[in-house]
Length: 293
Image 1 (cartoon, helix red, strand yellow):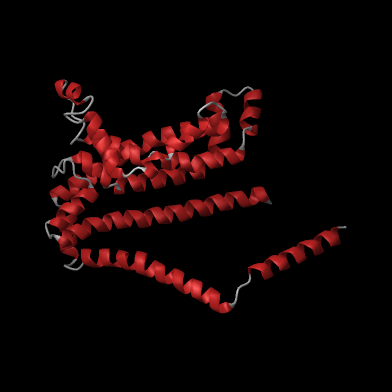
Image 2 (tube, rainbow, N blue to C red):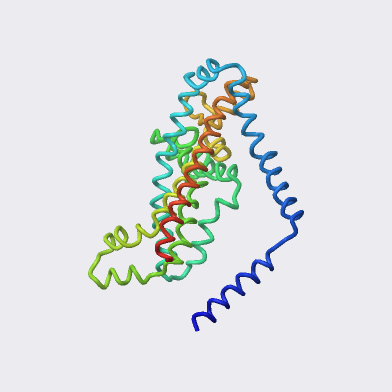
């Protein structure tokens, strides 16, 4: 019986191999197209950014990064990410838990609303906050009377960043939690665990790599966001300019060396995000292999 099953598996594997085998020239063509696309649209722009940033020498590069406005832009970018990412972390976990673990009316609507920032232009998102909190907006007059500045200030930039980045954590966790089901959480509750204990000792270990992955993507988008932040920032140099906005100003002033120097930091952020992504996927696969065996 065992020999028959083994032979059947071998035949199935061999037939699958035959079904997916292509002529050598097709594989070479596809590989060439893939590598060509990668080189043309990803590798060459990346090389161009670092080449332009260092074209006038290392001293000019460093001077462009330690200049007062550049340092202000870097600090503001980090500040916005430090505020927006934890907020999206809390929202993402809560939304994923609610959607994956409970059945309720409007569940499909909530799932659709989470994807809203993916379909709405970031510029439109920024305009929404101007409409709500601007001087002529719905609540703008009240905030103005109480000397609270939202638009053309850090709070508005944080709100815009939160809006465009809040799907990332939730979208990573929802399918992961749905695939795991509710059995382990229900068993923990039966054994006397409360909600916090169930999450900390049962749910979190199962979703930790997806959670870290979502946070990394959310942070990368928060630091690189341009459209929504541009609308609500006011482009006040040294006060409300993030790194992407500072790059735009320097480029418009034909200060290309400084513009590409700051842009290279954003490119390094993208490369770091990619490295972390690969590491997370490797760790997740490594952890899943013993369980499957």
